[in-house]
Length: 110
Length: 493
Image 1: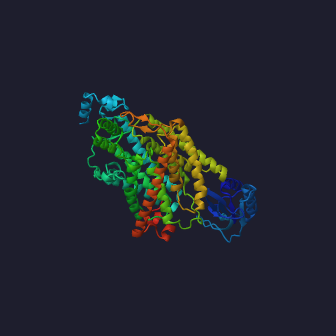
Image 2 (image 1 turned 90 degrees about the horizontal axis):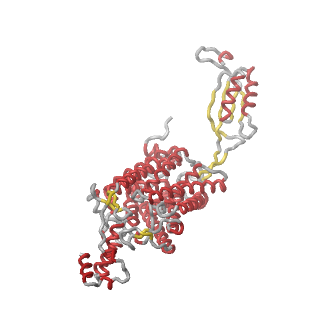
Image 3 (image 1 turned 120 degrees about the vertical axis):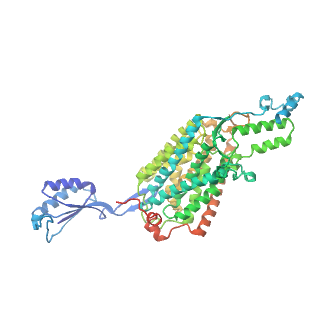
């Protein structure tokens, strides 16, 4: 499984690129968090508020081992702007997968 | 009776000898006039009335509502809406009478109760405008002034947003309009009208000519039977003192007495929807034409002057705030722009029909920069939680506008001049302009309003606090007033 946090406006670009390499599904969540970017300041009539958590998109994809490296590579290339706040990618092993409609398991279910 | 005296004098051939200085025989005929009511005036005033309501229940409510956090959105909307409705009822029960009827021995300060429940008012009763011989149906005037009484207490709630008990707020608002607003309106705007002044001035001259001291004194007393601030010569076209300083100072007192919001300076209290605030602010600008130009009570050239002024001062306020913020804080924010717009609107309110357009523009620009400085720097220095800047915008811009009115009214600066109804009774003249006198009158009016509203509001807040408490409990404040006080949520998914 690949978990990635990326800039929200990069979502569509990343989705298109991933579909092109053969990804057939992913889960997307709007999240807030902080990393190196560590927030920004907003000013309302002189009242300054530090916004410590920055909005990001969290992608979760479960793909076959064969595809994993290519997915990581694609996300990295597409989501990168070169500035602080581009996000992170984590790769995990998944114990099993099952398609609810058919009961298929393993790579068949993906 | 006066006419008889005059005739006997004239027949004795004494007239010319008795009145060498006046030499205006025409002025010595008792002033007779007819009351004309114009449909155009009624139409304009009816529209103005509804425009002021537009400022209030969608405008002000959304302007304030967008500035609070999601959990307090409905409390803000409810407070503005409920105060408007409650004061609307009070106005016809006794408010109008306290503001705009003869107050007997207290007439200088407050009206009486002779028009309670609008008694004596019907479709045939009239009130004077600012032009001799031009009158307005009393119902038209009652409805127009009602909207002013409705919006003023609603302005105050922004100062202690997100923390006041709804029940206490209603009680406070009722007390506040009764003891502060109605007397202020009376002191600033209660006068006999152009025809009454012309009539009494003529009677006074005739009595003086006839050596009738009692008659002259009676007429002089009638000429002075106006509100306290009116008699000082203070000018307030549409409510710089009555509405804005009055509400701004009450707000300042309120935010100090209620104390800061829980988490002030620590938690993020960013506005939950500046989109709403923009809609509200824009409705305020649109509705303010009814407020300012409607205050002319007639549909004539001064109405148009007030409209022009309400455009340019407002634009000036917005642009000034925007550039000041851009320069000093790095970015031109929408909230800054809207705040500046409201600042310009407030500042031009007392000057709307008195200043010239260029004067109004300078006024708006100046007020925009001054209020930006106050709100962005001074307020933080004093750690005041005037949450939505009721004092920083309404109070301060009201003070600036009220004092500036005394300068900008000068015909030399393009102003409309001081109205003078008595030099040539029966016609409106532009009086001699004396800057020292005008500045003194305006400053006195401002200081009086600050003191009256400040002390009066303090007493009322204290009273309500002792009897029922002003503030919600801390856990209610954390949860948000919407759920705790009103049992509903602004946004359900």
